[in-house]
Image (cartoon, rainbow, N blue to C red; front, side, top):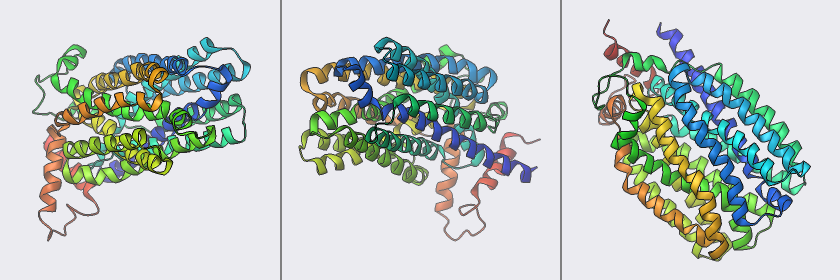
Length: 439
Protein backbone atom coordinates (compact mmCIF):
# COMPACT_ATOMS: atom_id res chain seq x y z
CA UNK A 1 0.00 0.00 0.00
CA UNK A 2 2.81 2.40 0.90
CA UNK A 3 4.74 1.74 -2.31
CA UNK A 4 1.74 2.60 -4.47
CA UNK A 5 0.82 5.71 -2.45
CA UNK A 6 4.22 7.42 -2.85
CA UNK A 7 4.18 7.66 -6.69
CA UNK A 8 0.58 8.91 -6.54
CA UNK A 9 1.61 11.67 -4.15
CA UNK A 10 4.55 12.64 -6.34
CA UNK A 11 2.35 12.71 -9.44
CA UNK A 12 -0.19 14.85 -7.61
CA UNK A 13 2.49 17.30 -6.47
CA UNK A 14 3.94 17.58 -9.98
CA UNK A 15 0.46 18.21 -11.39
CA UNK A 16 -0.16 21.01 -8.89
CA UNK A 17 3.21 22.52 -9.79
CA UNK A 18 2.16 22.52 -13.45
CA UNK A 19 -1.18 24.17 -12.64
CA UNK A 20 0.45 26.93 -10.60
CA UNK A 21 3.05 27.55 -13.31
CA UNK A 22 0.64 28.04 -16.19
CA UNK A 23 -1.75 30.03 -13.99
CA UNK A 24 1.07 32.51 -13.45
CA UNK A 25 1.86 32.43 -17.16
CA UNK A 26 -1.74 33.36 -17.94
CA UNK A 27 -1.76 36.34 -15.56
CA UNK A 28 1.56 37.70 -16.80
CA UNK A 29 0.46 37.34 -20.41
CA UNK A 30 -2.03 40.11 -19.73
CA UNK A 31 0.20 42.13 -17.39
CA UNK A 32 3.14 42.18 -19.79
CA UNK A 33 1.06 43.86 -22.51
CA UNK A 34 -0.61 46.54 -20.37
CA UNK A 35 1.56 49.30 -21.93
CA UNK A 36 0.41 48.27 -25.42
CA UNK A 37 -3.21 48.13 -24.27
CA UNK A 38 -2.91 51.63 -22.80
CA UNK A 39 -1.40 52.94 -26.03
CA UNK A 40 -4.07 51.23 -28.11
CA UNK A 41 -6.89 52.76 -26.07
CA UNK A 42 -5.20 56.08 -25.41
CA UNK A 43 -6.36 55.56 -21.82
CA UNK A 44 -5.49 57.60 -18.75
CA UNK A 45 -4.01 56.08 -15.62
CA UNK A 46 -7.41 56.15 -13.92
CA UNK A 47 -9.07 54.48 -16.93
CA UNK A 48 -6.45 51.72 -16.84
CA UNK A 49 -7.30 51.22 -13.18
CA UNK A 50 -10.96 50.76 -14.12
CA UNK A 51 -9.94 48.29 -16.82
CA UNK A 52 -7.95 46.18 -14.39
CA UNK A 53 -10.98 46.38 -12.08
CA UNK A 54 -12.86 44.19 -14.59
CA UNK A 55 -10.46 41.33 -13.95
CA UNK A 56 -10.85 41.83 -10.19
CA UNK A 57 -14.66 41.76 -10.45
CA UNK A 58 -14.50 38.47 -12.35
CA UNK A 59 -12.02 37.09 -9.83
CA UNK A 60 -14.36 37.80 -6.91
CA UNK A 61 -17.10 35.90 -8.73
CA UNK A 62 -14.73 33.01 -9.40
CA UNK A 63 -13.59 32.90 -5.78
CA UNK A 64 -17.16 32.82 -4.49
CA UNK A 65 -18.17 30.12 -6.96
CA UNK A 66 -15.03 28.10 -6.18
CA UNK A 67 -15.96 27.54 -2.52
CA UNK A 68 -19.09 25.64 -3.59
CA UNK A 69 -17.49 23.81 -6.52
CA UNK A 70 -14.46 22.53 -4.62
CA UNK A 71 -16.50 21.55 -1.55
CA UNK A 72 -19.00 19.60 -3.67
CA UNK A 73 -17.12 18.12 -6.62
CA UNK A 74 -13.45 18.73 -5.86
CA UNK A 75 -10.53 20.85 -6.98
CA UNK A 76 -10.08 18.83 -10.17
CA UNK A 77 -13.39 20.04 -11.59
CA UNK A 78 -12.69 23.58 -10.46
CA UNK A 79 -9.43 23.75 -12.42
CA UNK A 80 -11.03 22.19 -15.49
CA UNK A 81 -13.78 24.82 -15.61
CA UNK A 82 -11.22 27.53 -14.90
CA UNK A 83 -9.07 26.41 -17.84
CA UNK A 84 -11.89 27.11 -20.27
CA UNK A 85 -12.70 30.51 -18.73
CA UNK A 86 -9.07 31.62 -18.75
CA UNK A 87 -8.57 30.65 -22.39
CA UNK A 88 -11.80 32.29 -23.57
CA UNK A 89 -11.12 35.46 -21.59
CA UNK A 90 -7.54 36.03 -22.70
CA UNK A 91 -8.23 35.25 -26.36
CA UNK A 92 -11.24 37.58 -26.45
CA UNK A 93 -9.17 40.31 -24.75
CA UNK A 94 -6.51 39.96 -27.45
CA UNK A 95 -9.08 40.15 -30.23
CA UNK A 96 -10.75 43.18 -28.62
CA UNK A 97 -7.45 45.07 -28.33
CA UNK A 98 -6.23 44.30 -31.85
CA UNK A 99 -9.59 44.76 -33.56
CA UNK A 100 -10.21 48.05 -31.77
CA UNK A 101 -13.46 46.97 -30.13
CA UNK A 102 -12.87 49.46 -27.35
CA UNK A 103 -12.80 49.71 -23.58
CA UNK A 104 -16.09 47.90 -22.83
CA UNK A 105 -15.23 44.79 -24.87
CA UNK A 106 -11.84 44.44 -23.22
CA UNK A 107 -13.46 44.93 -19.80
CA UNK A 108 -15.96 42.11 -20.42
CA UNK A 109 -13.19 39.78 -21.64
CA UNK A 110 -11.20 40.53 -18.50
CA UNK A 111 -14.22 39.69 -16.34
CA UNK A 112 -14.28 36.21 -17.91
CA UNK A 113 -10.53 35.94 -17.54
CA UNK A 114 -10.72 37.03 -13.91
CA UNK A 115 -13.50 34.51 -13.17
CA UNK A 116 -11.29 31.72 -14.42
CA UNK A 117 -8.35 33.05 -12.43
CA UNK A 118 -10.33 33.20 -9.17
CA UNK A 119 -11.77 29.73 -9.64
CA UNK A 120 -8.36 28.30 -10.52
CA UNK A 121 -6.72 30.08 -7.58
CA UNK A 122 -8.92 28.50 -4.90
CA UNK A 123 -9.04 25.10 -6.60
CA UNK A 124 -5.30 24.67 -7.01
CA UNK A 125 -4.56 26.07 -3.53
CA UNK A 126 -6.94 23.59 -1.89
CA UNK A 127 -5.42 20.74 -3.89
CA UNK A 128 -1.93 22.06 -3.15
CA UNK A 129 -2.61 22.19 0.60
CA UNK A 130 -3.82 18.59 0.52
CA UNK A 131 -0.79 17.54 -1.51
CA UNK A 132 1.38 19.32 1.07
CA UNK A 133 -0.19 17.17 3.80
CA UNK A 134 0.36 14.04 1.72
CA UNK A 135 4.00 15.05 1.18
CA UNK A 136 4.64 15.68 4.88
CA UNK A 137 6.64 18.90 4.44
CA UNK A 138 6.15 22.55 3.52
CA UNK A 139 5.51 22.77 -0.22
CA UNK A 140 3.00 25.60 -0.59
CA UNK A 141 5.62 28.36 -1.05
CA UNK A 142 7.22 26.20 -3.75
CA UNK A 143 3.86 25.92 -5.51
CA UNK A 144 3.62 29.70 -5.42
CA UNK A 145 7.23 29.87 -6.59
CA UNK A 146 6.09 27.87 -9.60
CA UNK A 147 3.38 30.49 -10.07
CA UNK A 148 6.09 33.14 -9.96
CA UNK A 149 8.15 31.18 -12.50
CA UNK A 150 5.09 31.26 -14.74
CA UNK A 151 4.65 35.00 -14.25
CA UNK A 152 8.37 35.48 -14.84
CA UNK A 153 8.14 33.59 -18.13
CA UNK A 154 5.00 35.47 -19.09
CA UNK A 155 6.54 38.84 -18.27
CA UNK A 156 9.66 37.96 -20.24
CA UNK A 157 7.58 36.94 -23.23
CA UNK A 158 5.57 40.14 -22.81
CA UNK A 159 8.74 42.25 -22.84
CA UNK A 160 9.90 40.47 -26.01
CA UNK A 161 6.48 40.92 -27.58
CA UNK A 162 6.62 44.64 -26.76
CA UNK A 163 10.13 44.90 -28.18
CA UNK A 164 9.24 43.20 -31.48
CA UNK A 165 5.70 44.61 -31.74
CA UNK A 166 4.02 41.19 -31.80
CA UNK A 167 0.24 41.65 -32.29
CA UNK A 168 -1.57 41.31 -28.98
CA UNK A 169 -4.15 38.94 -30.49
CA UNK A 170 -1.48 36.49 -31.68
CA UNK A 171 0.37 36.62 -28.38
CA UNK A 172 -2.79 36.07 -26.31
CA UNK A 173 -4.26 33.36 -28.55
CA UNK A 174 -1.17 31.14 -28.54
CA UNK A 175 -0.60 31.36 -24.80
CA UNK A 176 -4.31 31.04 -23.99
CA UNK A 177 -4.47 27.68 -25.77
CA UNK A 178 -1.25 26.47 -24.12
CA UNK A 179 -2.50 27.43 -20.65
CA UNK A 180 -5.85 25.68 -21.14
CA UNK A 181 -4.31 22.44 -22.39
CA UNK A 182 -1.76 22.24 -19.55
CA UNK A 183 -4.38 23.00 -16.89
CA UNK A 184 -6.71 20.31 -18.22
CA UNK A 185 -3.90 17.75 -18.28
CA UNK A 186 -2.65 18.71 -14.79
CA UNK A 187 -6.10 18.60 -13.21
CA UNK A 188 -6.60 15.03 -14.39
CA UNK A 189 -3.65 14.05 -12.15
CA UNK A 190 -4.89 15.71 -8.95
CA UNK A 191 -5.48 13.51 -5.91
CA UNK A 192 -8.63 13.53 -3.82
CA UNK A 193 -8.30 16.28 -1.23
CA UNK A 194 -11.48 15.17 0.55
CA UNK A 195 -9.79 12.07 1.98
CA UNK A 196 -8.08 14.19 4.63
CA UNK A 197 -11.39 15.52 5.87
CA UNK A 198 -12.65 11.98 6.39
CA UNK A 199 -9.88 10.87 8.76
CA UNK A 200 -8.12 13.89 10.24
CA UNK A 201 -9.50 15.74 13.25
CA UNK A 202 -8.10 18.92 14.75
CA UNK A 203 -8.30 20.27 18.27
CA UNK A 204 -8.48 23.90 17.24
CA UNK A 205 -11.82 24.11 15.43
CA UNK A 206 -14.70 25.43 17.52
CA UNK A 207 -17.16 22.80 16.25
CA UNK A 208 -16.67 19.05 15.74
CA UNK A 209 -18.51 18.85 12.43
CA UNK A 210 -18.16 20.28 8.94
CA UNK A 211 -18.29 24.06 9.17
CA UNK A 212 -20.81 26.07 7.17
CA UNK A 213 -19.87 29.09 5.03
CA UNK A 214 -21.36 31.42 7.66
CA UNK A 215 -19.36 29.82 10.49
CA UNK A 216 -16.17 30.09 8.46
CA UNK A 217 -16.73 33.79 7.80
CA UNK A 218 -17.44 34.55 11.47
CA UNK A 219 -14.26 32.92 12.77
CA UNK A 220 -11.75 35.58 13.92
CA UNK A 221 -8.94 33.48 12.47
CA UNK A 222 -10.51 33.70 9.00
CA UNK A 223 -10.68 37.49 9.17
CA UNK A 224 -7.15 37.91 10.54
CA UNK A 225 -5.64 35.54 7.98
CA UNK A 226 -7.64 37.50 5.44
CA UNK A 227 -5.90 40.69 6.58
CA UNK A 228 -2.52 39.01 6.03
CA UNK A 229 -3.49 37.89 2.56
CA UNK A 230 -5.09 41.27 1.80
CA UNK A 231 -1.94 43.21 2.68
CA UNK A 232 0.44 40.88 0.89
CA UNK A 233 -1.87 40.51 -2.11
CA UNK A 234 -1.89 44.30 -2.45
CA UNK A 235 1.90 44.32 -2.15
CA UNK A 236 2.13 41.76 -4.93
CA UNK A 237 -0.81 42.92 -7.03
CA UNK A 238 0.08 46.61 -7.02
CA UNK A 239 3.45 45.69 -8.52
CA UNK A 240 1.84 43.49 -11.14
CA UNK A 241 -0.66 46.19 -12.10
CA UNK A 242 1.39 49.36 -11.75
CA UNK A 243 5.13 48.68 -11.60
CA UNK A 244 5.79 48.93 -15.37
CA UNK A 245 3.81 52.17 -15.61
CA UNK A 246 5.38 53.52 -12.39
CA UNK A 247 8.85 52.93 -13.82
CA UNK A 248 7.82 54.53 -17.13
CA UNK A 249 6.05 57.57 -15.67
CA UNK A 250 8.02 57.95 -12.43
CA UNK A 251 11.56 56.95 -13.44
CA UNK A 252 11.53 57.71 -17.19
CA UNK A 253 11.97 54.21 -18.61
CA UNK A 254 10.50 53.13 -21.96
CA UNK A 255 7.79 50.46 -22.38
CA UNK A 256 10.18 47.54 -22.86
CA UNK A 257 12.34 48.55 -19.89
CA UNK A 258 9.24 49.00 -17.73
CA UNK A 259 8.12 45.47 -18.55
CA UNK A 260 11.68 44.31 -17.84
CA UNK A 261 11.56 45.76 -14.31
CA UNK A 262 8.37 43.78 -13.71
CA UNK A 263 10.41 40.72 -14.69
CA UNK A 264 12.96 41.65 -12.00
CA UNK A 265 10.20 41.91 -9.41
CA UNK A 266 8.77 38.53 -10.41
CA UNK A 267 12.23 36.95 -10.30
CA UNK A 268 12.65 38.24 -6.73
CA UNK A 269 9.25 36.79 -5.85
CA UNK A 270 10.35 33.43 -7.23
CA UNK A 271 13.63 33.43 -5.29
CA UNK A 272 11.80 34.39 -2.10
CA UNK A 273 9.34 31.56 -2.44
CA UNK A 274 11.97 28.93 -3.18
CA UNK A 275 14.19 30.09 -0.31
CA UNK A 276 11.22 30.55 2.00
CA UNK A 277 10.13 26.92 2.35
CA UNK A 278 13.10 25.80 4.51
CA UNK A 279 12.83 29.03 6.52
CA UNK A 280 9.17 28.32 7.28
CA UNK A 281 9.99 24.74 8.26
CA UNK A 282 12.70 25.99 10.60
CA UNK A 283 11.15 29.09 12.18
CA UNK A 284 7.43 28.80 11.52
CA UNK A 285 5.04 31.03 9.60
CA UNK A 286 4.75 33.92 12.06
CA UNK A 287 8.41 35.04 12.31
CA UNK A 288 8.87 34.67 8.56
CA UNK A 289 5.76 36.76 7.90
CA UNK A 290 6.93 39.55 10.20
CA UNK A 291 10.37 39.77 8.58
CA UNK A 292 8.76 39.65 5.13
CA UNK A 293 6.60 42.67 5.94
CA UNK A 294 9.63 44.70 7.05
CA UNK A 295 11.60 43.81 3.91
CA UNK A 296 8.65 44.72 1.64
CA UNK A 297 8.22 48.13 3.30
CA UNK A 298 11.93 48.94 2.99
CA UNK A 299 11.98 47.93 -0.69
CA UNK A 300 8.88 49.92 -1.53
CA UNK A 301 10.35 52.95 0.20
CA UNK A 302 13.51 52.78 -1.90
CA UNK A 303 11.46 52.60 -5.08
CA UNK A 304 9.28 55.57 -4.16
CA UNK A 305 11.71 57.96 -2.50
CA UNK A 306 15.06 57.37 -4.24
CA UNK A 307 15.23 58.86 -7.72
CA UNK A 308 18.21 56.76 -8.78
CA UNK A 309 17.26 53.92 -11.08
CA UNK A 310 19.77 51.29 -9.81
CA UNK A 311 18.70 51.91 -6.20
CA UNK A 312 15.04 51.88 -7.23
CA UNK A 313 15.63 48.47 -8.81
CA UNK A 314 17.23 47.25 -5.56
CA UNK A 315 14.01 48.41 -3.91
CA UNK A 316 12.01 46.39 -6.45
CA UNK A 317 14.04 43.31 -5.52
CA UNK A 318 13.43 43.81 -1.79
CA UNK A 319 9.76 44.51 -2.44
CA UNK A 320 9.48 41.23 -4.36
CA UNK A 321 11.32 39.24 -1.68
CA UNK A 322 9.17 40.71 1.08
CA UNK A 323 5.88 40.13 -0.73
CA UNK A 324 6.72 36.61 -1.85
CA UNK A 325 5.57 34.47 1.09
CA UNK A 326 2.48 36.24 2.44
CA UNK A 327 -0.09 34.78 0.08
CA UNK A 328 1.12 31.14 0.18
CA UNK A 329 1.45 31.16 3.98
CA UNK A 330 -2.05 32.61 4.23
CA UNK A 331 -3.40 29.84 2.03
CA UNK A 332 -1.62 27.17 4.08
CA UNK A 333 -2.97 28.66 7.31
CA UNK A 334 -6.50 28.77 5.90
CA UNK A 335 -6.26 25.09 4.93
CA UNK A 336 -4.92 23.81 8.29
CA UNK A 337 -8.34 22.34 9.15
CA UNK A 338 -9.16 19.99 6.25
CA UNK A 339 -12.88 19.89 7.09
CA UNK A 340 -13.29 23.55 6.20
CA UNK A 341 -10.33 24.00 3.85
CA UNK A 342 -12.31 24.73 0.67
CA UNK A 343 -14.64 27.25 2.30
CA UNK A 344 -11.93 28.93 4.38
CA UNK A 345 -9.49 29.20 1.49
CA UNK A 346 -12.32 30.68 -0.57
CA UNK A 347 -13.16 33.19 2.19
CA UNK A 348 -9.55 34.21 2.79
CA UNK A 349 -8.85 34.49 -0.93
CA UNK A 350 -11.98 36.63 -1.34
CA UNK A 351 -10.73 39.02 1.35
CA UNK A 352 -7.33 39.06 -0.36
CA UNK A 353 -8.87 39.81 -3.72
CA UNK A 354 -10.39 42.98 -2.30
CA UNK A 355 -6.86 44.26 -2.94
CA UNK A 356 -7.32 43.51 -6.62
CA UNK A 357 -10.85 44.93 -6.60
CA UNK A 358 -10.22 48.22 -4.79
CA UNK A 359 -6.49 48.57 -5.35
CA UNK A 360 -6.34 49.37 -9.09
CA UNK A 361 -8.91 52.21 -9.14
CA UNK A 362 -7.64 53.61 -5.81
CA UNK A 363 -4.01 53.68 -6.93
CA UNK A 364 -5.07 54.92 -10.37
CA UNK A 365 -7.12 57.75 -8.84
CA UNK A 366 -4.29 58.78 -6.51
CA UNK A 367 -1.83 58.44 -9.37
CA UNK A 368 -3.74 61.08 -11.32
CA UNK A 369 -3.11 63.56 -8.49
CA UNK A 370 0.23 62.64 -6.91
CA UNK A 371 1.81 60.34 -9.50
CA UNK A 372 2.01 56.56 -9.43
CA UNK A 373 5.04 56.46 -7.14
CA UNK A 374 3.27 58.59 -4.57
CA UNK A 375 0.09 56.55 -4.93
CA UNK A 376 1.99 53.40 -3.97
CA UNK A 377 2.36 54.81 -0.45
CA UNK A 378 -1.09 53.40 0.30
CA UNK A 379 0.42 49.92 0.02
CA UNK A 380 2.59 50.66 3.10
CA UNK A 381 -0.43 50.71 5.39
CA UNK A 382 -1.67 47.33 4.23
CA UNK A 383 1.73 45.66 4.47
CA UNK A 384 2.09 46.92 8.05
CA UNK A 385 -1.39 45.61 8.87
CA UNK A 386 -0.42 42.22 7.45
CA UNK A 387 2.67 42.14 9.65
CA UNK A 388 0.64 43.03 12.75
CA UNK A 389 -1.93 40.28 11.99
CA UNK A 390 0.71 37.63 11.28
CA UNK A 391 0.09 35.78 14.56
CA UNK A 392 -3.16 34.41 13.07
CA UNK A 393 -1.12 32.30 10.64
CA UNK A 394 0.41 30.23 13.45
CA UNK A 395 0.35 26.50 12.71
CA UNK A 396 -2.62 24.60 14.20
CA UNK A 397 -3.79 21.00 14.31
CA UNK A 398 -1.78 18.60 12.17
CA UNK A 399 0.38 21.45 10.86
CA UNK A 400 1.44 22.33 14.41
CA UNK A 401 2.21 18.70 15.17
CA UNK A 402 4.31 18.44 12.03
CA UNK A 403 6.23 21.56 13.06
CA UNK A 404 6.87 20.06 16.52
CA UNK A 405 8.18 16.87 14.93
CA UNK A 406 10.55 18.83 12.68
CA UNK A 407 11.92 20.81 15.61
CA UNK A 408 12.30 17.65 17.67
CA UNK A 409 14.23 16.08 14.80
CA UNK A 410 16.60 19.06 14.68
CA UNK A 411 17.22 18.75 18.41
CA UNK A 412 18.52 15.18 17.88
CA UNK A 413 21.45 15.55 15.47
CA UNK A 414 22.81 12.06 16.18
CA UNK A 415 19.68 10.41 14.74
CA UNK A 416 20.61 8.70 11.44
CA UNK A 417 17.44 6.66 10.99
CA UNK A 418 16.00 9.05 8.41
CA UNK A 419 13.38 10.89 10.48
CA UNK A 420 15.22 14.17 9.96
CA UNK A 421 16.97 13.34 6.72
CA UNK A 422 16.25 12.54 3.14
CA UNK A 423 12.97 10.56 3.37
CA UNK A 424 10.73 12.37 5.86
CA UNK A 425 7.67 12.19 3.65
CA UNK A 426 7.19 8.42 3.76
CA UNK A 427 7.63 8.18 7.52
CA UNK A 428 5.35 11.15 8.08
CA UNK A 429 2.67 9.50 5.95
CA UNK A 430 2.97 6.27 7.93
CA UNK A 431 2.90 8.04 11.30
CA UNK A 432 -0.06 10.24 10.37
CA UNK A 433 -1.92 7.26 8.90
CA UNK A 434 -1.49 5.31 12.12
CA UNK A 435 -2.61 8.30 14.20
CA UNK A 436 -5.63 9.14 12.11
CA UNK A 437 -6.89 5.62 11.41
CA UNK A 438 -5.86 3.13 14.12
CA UNK A 439 -7.81 0.35 12.42
